[in-house]
Figure (cartoon, rainbow, N blue to C red):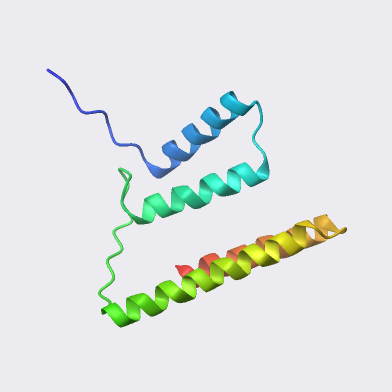
Length: 110
């Protein structure tokens, strides 16, 4: 009889993505990892893994839409700041600032 495959945890999925990308491209850059982590977090929030987050928000439509708009604005702001930081000459100092900024955004979103 056919047996359904076991659903992956978020961490298993992320590690598999890392390995697959590295096998296909021969490298795994920080930008690649960042993209994969962001997608993994989205999928985790959508409950696509065996280890669901369990967060249920009882929001009316207006509040939900307002929060979505602000989240998009925060993401756009983070992207613009990251691009600016990456094009700067003192990258090591600015990398720490970018990490702090991303941690702040993650805190605000959660």
